[in-house]
Every structure is written in structure tokens, then in C-alpha cells.
Amino acid sequence: MAIERLSLTEAAGAIARGEVTAVAVTERAVARMKRIGQVLNCVVDLDQTEALIAAATADKTRAEGKPLGLLHGVPLAHKDVFYRKGRPCASGSKIRRGFVPETTATVLDRLDAAGAVNLGTLHMPEFAMSPTGYNEHYGHCRNPWNTEYVSGGSSSGSAASVAARLVYGSLGSDTGGSIRHPAAMCGVTGLKPTWSRVSLAGVMPLSWSLDCVGPIARGARDCARLLKVIAGADPSDPTATTRSVPDYEGGLTGDCEGMRIAVPRTYYYDHVTREVKQALDESLATLRDCGATVVETAVPDMALVNAMSHLVLTVEAATIHRKWFAERPGDYADQVLARLEPGLYYPATRYAEALALRAKITTAFLKAALGDAHAIHLPAVSIPVPSIAETTEGNPASIATKIGVITHCTRGLNYLGLPVISVPCGFANGLPLAFQLVGKPFAETTLLRIADAFQRVTDFHRQLPILAQET
Image (tube, rainbow, N blue to C red):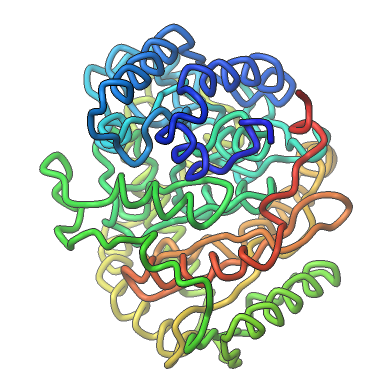
């Protein structure tokens, strides 16, 4: 098998056993990023020289018989929101073009310490403000299954790069679905952890109360390993939980025995198309075959959840951008400015109320939608992947409606702070479909176990776009 077709954990194992060198794996990844990355417009900054030096060091470490980290020699690249000292970080914007941070994000330090090889940074929409991957300044990231279709956003380059087998995994950020949209649309696995599970230190914020950092990779096992490396307390981020970090990989039993999976048909199925519903139903049948029991539930008032989420996001984002609004309004894309500016005008009392109600609303959601089950099964995106033309051309109101449908199943869950994983489960028109699993706070182990059991008996996450099959 070509080395780029290995999963992250397979690649790490092959390097550790000496079956392939970190240099060979990295050279292959660099070549693919140069060739295929250009077609997909998914690579922002390729740090070839430093990557090959790090790979050579990794091979030397192994040859000397020294201890190896969980990601030893594995090439990764990440969304352009993660600061790395001395390297540019524009966050997809014109305003931050040329910004060079003086610190490195905690999560990148942890990946480095685990032996990962950093290849550079990946495409994203301007300041993470698009669920499709659109960027007025740097162009649209392309879906590797069909380059005329959206990749999803805002961790667009992360999902496209993993799906096209340019890298073995990537970190993204998720404020309203920005890990899950692109993972679902590109046919890979994306995990939004519980809020506070992963440090946000050194990450360009969008909304500090909603932002989550998490992995995008080919399968649940890969995500489990990445989460193990990046999770945990951080003195640089006082909001990061001090809870111990479980052995996520060790919790992958290969079955769903004893698992109860809740399926709320209200709200989340409002826009689901026939093709998506068929894939969702088939995924539930597979989970039953793996030992799970499926029960139907309902959800509380999601209009309230979404309103609270929108209020918190826009107020916090406007606070972050307020100075730039005044000094450089012309350097924002019109649609980005239009989404950010309203946050300046909400009363402080409404924002405070939204934060104060968060725990109560989350409890009500879990009581209604989860009940006594272990996970909630939802659509990731209600409709088949739309084309770039559908989301950029024509009547602005129609475009806004389409984008609203794309985010329908993801956006409120960030306000609730719950962990969610997006899992590939089928195809429509040759492009991927996916479901989400939602759990109680810090139930990532449960979600990963269910997702992994599903992936052991299906191969949706192993399917290759034609573009990725190039040698």
C-alpha cells in the first residue's frame, strides 16, 4: 500500500517499527501538498525545509533507541489559526496578512513533543466566518471529491488535506460546526471536544465561550490518539479543564454492546433530504448490528438554543474585531463584516443573560434529547454537499438560506458545550455524507468508541477521492 494511504496510527506504527522512515513519509507528503494542494487551494504555508529537518531528527532518535512519542515522525499540518513562533498566521484574512506570532499555541507544542512533523498551515475562510470554505481574499478551498463543490468550513483546508491524503491528520477549530462541516463534506472524521477539554492558548479566537480545538483525521482511532496528545490542563489557558485525560484509544472496544443511542426526529430532520435520510437510517442499522439499542427522543426549543449561540458568538467576535472595524473596515469581505458588526449593538444585559442561562439550557437539552442514552445520533449536514456556484452565485437571500440549512444541525451544540464527532456514512452524487454523535460533557471516550465500532464494519472513511489516488 502507498504510504499516504495509511491511517495516522498505521503510519506512526510503521515508522516506529522501522518499516518506513519519517523522511520518506514526509517527502511524500510534501510532494503531494505541492501538487494536489495547489489544485485544492488548501495549503497556505508549506514549511518544507523545517519539516524535513524534523523528519531526519525523528529517524535519528529512533535509530538511537530513544523513547518515541505517540506521533513520532508523522507529518501533520493545521488550520491557519494556530500560532507558531516565527511563522506567519493570517487566519484567512487580509487584516492579519504578515502577522508573525511571538509564541506557539499550546496544542502545537504538544504535537511537537509527541514527535509529529509540522508541514505548515492550511486554508480557512476569513476569520473562520464561512461554513462552506469561501474566502474572498484567497479563493475557495476545493472539495477533493469534486473540485466544483464546497469543502465545508471553516477548517476547510484541514479536511480537504486529510481527505486527499496530503497529511495524516490536522487540527481545526469549531465555533458552530467548523470542524464537523468540512469533515462531513470531505468524508473524514472530525471531533469537536467538550468546551474546555483542549487549551485555546495561542489560537486566534472567534468566540472564546464557544471555540473548541479538535482533530480531523481519517478515522475515530486517529482522532483518539490526537485528542490524547492535545487535551489537558494548561497554565496558559485558565479555562482549560484540570480533569485527567483518559486513554481514548484504550476505550475502543470494537463494539457498541450496552450502548443506547438516541435519535431525536424533531428539528434535526426538518431539512433532511431523501438521500441523507437513507444514509442515516442505514448507519443506525449498522450500529444496531454492532450491539447498540436505538431509541427515539425529542429536543427542546432549538430556536432558543440557536438564538443564544448567535448572541454569544456575535458579541464576542465583535469585541475581538472592534478596533479593526474602526481602522480597516475595507479590508473585510462584505459578508464577513455583515456577520460580525451586529455584535456591537446587543445590550450587555442580553449577553450576560445568554451566558447565565447556558447551564440550564444544556441540562434541558440533555434531558430531552439524550435521556438515559449514551449518545445522540444526528445528521451532520441535512443536504448533499452543495456546489460552489450554489453558495456564491445568484440571489443573496437564496444563498443565505442554503448556508442556514448547512449549519442547521451543528451551530447550537457549541453553546451547549457538548462533545460531538462527525462520522462518514455514505455518498450522494459522488460526495460524502455523515452523521454526528453527541454526548454528555467529557464523554469523548463513549463517542469515539461508537464511531470506531461503526468504522470497523464500514469503509466510508477509507474511500479515496480520485484526486487522492494519484501516485
